[in-house]
Length: 417
Length: 204
Image (cartoon, rainbow over all chains, first blue to last red; front, side, top):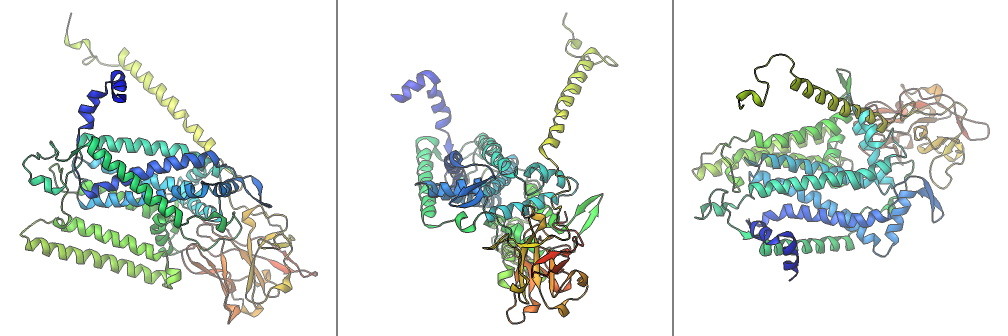
């Protein structure tokens, strides 16, 4: 009856027939993208709650007898509210889950070769989403303005400043003047709450629109079924009610996991970190930045030179060139793939020795950089760690490549890549 | 009359009215959007002197930077060999560029390039801002042989040797920490006797 009321005004029946009955192929791996989307929705909802209560200012106010920045005091007060602490933890945990899901989704697309024609555009949109999500996480980290937030932000300020030629201007634009500046918190608040969510929602919309237009890739098993026609006709379940109900219950399950984690596992305890003070504590960044952190520890201090008037320092190499190079490699992957035919099925990663071993080698390299972030507690020198990283990567790549080539040889499969 | 050239100016030469009008539109749009770039300068304000412009003057007294006695003058007799504290010039603690690490070692422990004229009774002071990415350096005290204690930045493990002019012994920092002169006064407190003898903070 409710449907009929809306249908008489909005022609919903046509929408129902055309869109809601579209086929959605099913496979457990397809839930990774949904995890990212649902954690984003959770972030928006909890973020709205936090935004009502947060004060984006560094002027000093009195909090239980001590003078602290107003932003810090407002977050401490949020933590004291009845639902405040758990909502803040859900917000932070959802951010961690979103970035983890985005990375897992990226790996799934890479290893099942779903980036091939015609989906190169969506691969690039996905990479932009990943970068924007990391910027969102970073700008959010400063907002509580605790000792840890300020340290992390000062490091990022100098990394931005170390970009040659435009670094000075770029860092002043992002951080409102030279660091530390009272304008940094309001500017980051604006970016985190208005600018970046707008970009994210736009990119997510584009990502899903292209997905619907090109149709989702199908599991390999569909390829052998008679009804499948190479992407022109999908085998799966309709969006409503079957897929819709599955997605909805998955969203609720994800909320359950996030709330469970938020209840029992604290994170970002700003009351323990304290407001900003002159000293710098022993701290490490959140896990998704550990790769850059480890790399920065390994770059020797005497690697400085000037090109065309632009200064390249160890900070540039570790904080700008390395991440930019990694992104570039990711972006080029669909264009270096040699297949010319459009692909609509998930490829078995075991059938592609070169790409799969390259992915494994790259993954091992990034993991050794995470370990490099801990050389102070592991008592390894930077030079030794660099050698271990190179050896481990070379070993992983060559061993996996050899094993995969032999596996494909036994299968009688002569594929080279 | 319908003919092929009605839609465009395909075979006409020179500047037609159509091309001129299009050129004017493009020029004015370019000018309008180009002028927006002027706004970018407003959004990226410059501070005079840059971020790490220190305001320490010779003669300023040293006060503790943190802890329960923050803001009170540093007492020279309270520090043993192998101790280090973070200190500010008196009254100028709001400028983070003024943060120094005051260290007590033995007088005979100093080697070049430490400027011994800037030390006094084993006290030496260096800038506390790591020259890598701006974190505050920390002190790693050696309990058995206090005189070989050293300065380390915990952000990316740069190690500086205070007995050798805060030279970079390991890690990604590009230059040593700058030294600044200190002297023990009559009343047991300390005061600065010079400016920094080198650049401070990240060198980007």
